[in-house]
Length: 397
Image (cartoon, rainbow, N blue to C red; front, side, top):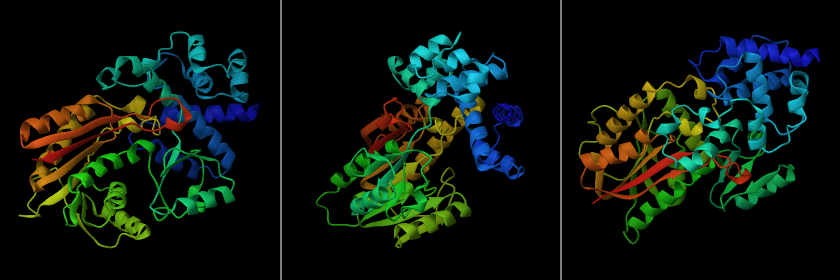
């Protein structure tokens, strides 16, 4: 009994001290590193309590900290819980009930309060409750199997008794705690990439079809490359390309180079530029595809970083919206005639998505919108417990 109350007291200390200025995962890593006496189970139990606490977002925000912890344990778990049995035994008896039934037992609970500024999210009202409720659970781990590696990957998973489900021909879903790097060759055999992020492949396939029959190696620029996941995806879909990657910091490009080495991508150009400022680097060079996986609020991924449900500030949306417009406006002039611009965010806020699309169509009347979609990952079915993201594909007509 004392062990579980010790977990709770430590978790209460954490949420009292943590202010959201750095990612919770990094903060917890530092917190635990200074407490060597805590074993792996202790750290896991405390971290789970903290993450579940933040999964409530702004729901029940007027309740005291003990009540909020009890509510979060009740709603975020589906099996009997020792700590909840001590705090609210009557709730523990009902913990296996459907989520909607459990929510009705919590006085004043409104799932729409979980997500900040839900009114600014471009999801039909009838689905907003499902979207908000999904944040009570951590999304699954998704793998994208690289070309010609499916049989190898499945054999390794089965040999190691790893449970998985095959969502598509190239997408596998696993428990989010699976230590996959000990079994598979990351980036060579599989890429850790969310289910919805993998669906961007459909947009890149459209690009491939636009150039079908044209005997040329496509020139591709990933202008906000980050870790290079979209570049690897483009390589797998398009085949041989002339690839340029850029980002704002040297450390980002260095990490990308290491990942490309693992992925077997050796022919590319990497540069450090700030695409939000006026560009003079490329002069007269043009690209057949520009991928802009733009900096954003990340609101479509808050199921993995639920601290943002509490600490995100409304003014950040305007900041990111302006940044996205600047980047897109600066790189679009480098599109070739008939070239495609792929705009991506992991946001669900309309101003960052459809708002930017409308801005670009107005500013660049020669652009033709081929496809746009808020790629939903918020349904509670097991096979789609994923992030949400947005993609729009334009053609330079």
